[in-house]
Length: 607
Image 1: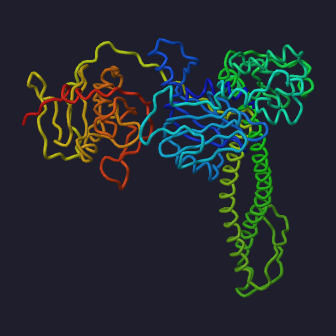
Image 2: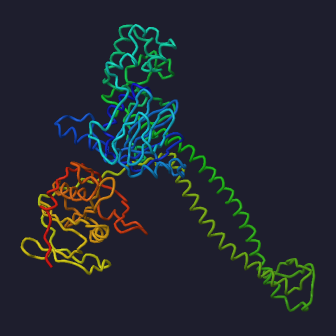
Image 3: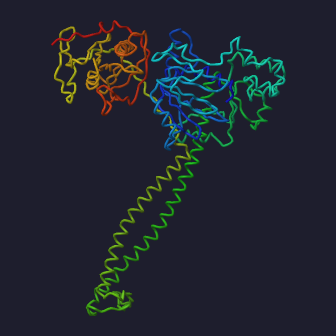
């Protein structure tokens, strides 16, 4: 990825990353890592909305995947989908998951000339370097943007793109126009890092006036992004065969992104087909999304080819097993045939003395044909008869097990053939399910009477909570504080560690759980009448304030909360009361702290 293209991508991407939560990290191929990001662009869009300004980019999905590849053909892009790989993740991916999963991005610093981005999350930093890969730091790296401990910077100060090409630094990075004609001089392009390899290839194909114009455009930034590819169809990756992305991704379907228009002669010299198409995008994020679909399709195709080879090797193993089972079936049938000889011996046993031994005997079967029965001369006729009966019985039992094993093997073989077909069809490319839009309700109403809080709770010290009309609305332990929002919703907050645990026990599965985004705070529960009842923004603001007032940000003006359904919150095993594991978060919000809410919303208790 060219440094100028990386700069354009960072200009659009960095603001959108602030506040996003890292859900999981995947290694989809060698040197290719994907970060699952939730809530991308939420804070950016809110910031522009408050200032009545149009946002540079819109994000209409809750989850995006940031994928990068290190090395010579490095790239970085966003996508709506990811490639699912079932291999065990390597140790360094597990280490990244340990320290980054569930963390929110607080600040971002990017050096576009070096093509690296440094992210700050809670208690650590990690760096994506397109040349060297990912590094994890527990102290603020050099040249990174580090916020004060346990605080958030304002939105406009939480991301930095360096080097800033200001007047005092301009001459350090940009060559004079007169030097462009000598762009391939090693001493010149080594001195000015903005003379990137792709730019050095482009300039000789342009007249001097166009060289200066292009170089000036790059200095000021902005402009369109150009994508060169044989694939002119927008890909949509999902699991359906009708819309299989692999049918569009071919082995020779190369693509190239550039921050400027490339001459046709240069493209041919670089090995691209003369029929290559030129697509123009207004910003780098849209271009990266388009190219990202093709990259995912190619990665999936490579993985599928590798997986198919492994599956085909298993298919050969099944073929060898089938041959062995056929041989075993033949052997068992021969054992079963001994039953006829045993019956003949049994019918003619009276002709022989008890101790009679021989190598064989001649008898007539039921059809009148003479049959030669081989015997073990070390045993009597009776003992040979018993051995034949025993062998036939073993053959029958073995044949039953063999038939069962043949059926299992056929099922395993069919499953394997289906997996081969799925890998070939690209069915392991996953597309996240779209959430159904909730229908807002005009009336919110009061909670009404609560039922039995929790039979297992066995609360003994309780007080009767009454509304303004002196009617009891529920019984709650003294460790839990009760509030009523301005919209009529009942809000529970743990007074202490024990109260946090009790508040969670009293929550229904569809109630809303609120907590500070990072750090320790009280657990706050917003009670709802039913699972489809909407929570008004003012109630979320009030519940968020009640949570933040019981945290380390209580003296600040603003703070961030996370919220989820109570059904996704479960207590940690063998841990202190109130410590929970969040299986799934529904998002984060920036809350303005209003200390007056604590007294205004409190419900008086009466014994």
